Amino acid sequence: MIIFGTKGYLYQLAILTLVCAQCGNPSAHTLRKRVTKFTLFFVPLFPVSTKYTTQCTFCGAEQKLTAEQAEQLQAQAVGGPDSEQRSQQQPYGS
Image (cartoon, rainbow, N blue to C red; front, side, top):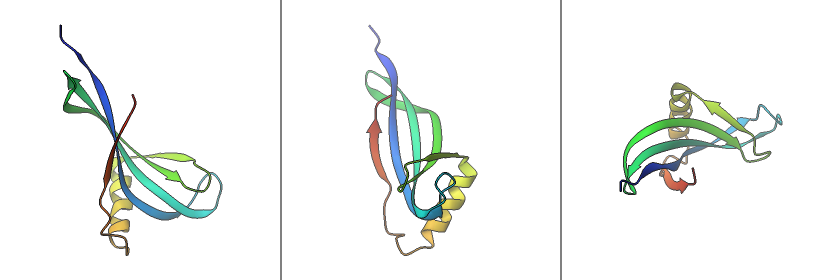
């Protein structure tokens, strides 16, 4: 019997202060990277998909981003005072 499937990982890349497109408030937004990996016998082998989003901490609205947009926002965050913050990995259910 071969057991295979997928498992998701959520990385928090940065926290930025942006104006929310949904509520219009200037608030903190978390920049997140969601990676889904193929697993064989519960061992993650290779990434199947990668998605980037920002989430408003005021209203909770999420906005999808391209990889290029996420890199630009992350570069803005590195120039800020919180550049010492490491990305955090958290598994999520898929």
